Image 1: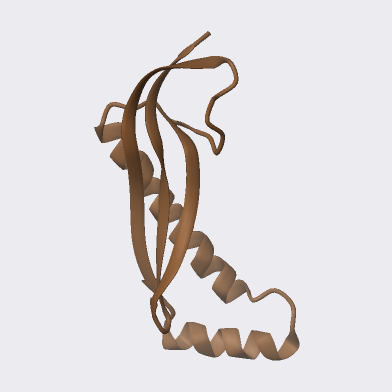
Image 2 (image 1 turned 60 degrees about the vertical axis):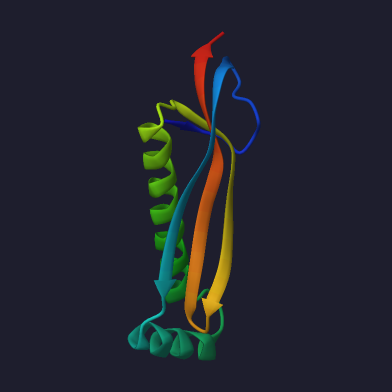
Length: 106
């Protein structure tokens, strides 16, 4: 699956638009993660506990989006974006979305 944040893919032409696809995941921080994040924040710098949580959530949403596009017959996704919203304190929704298309080499 080719995934691009642009609205075209160099070397390919879009032959069919299949519509919007999305992948959603909802994640929460654990008590242990909050504790470790608090300890790391006391020393400053990168908070690896939260970086890992964010990366895992984005990858999971991305994988769901690709699965959704594949089920619809797409071989590419254009205009891909991420969005995140806090549903409640400590619980975040991560959304990956884009336009599913069929492309062919030029």
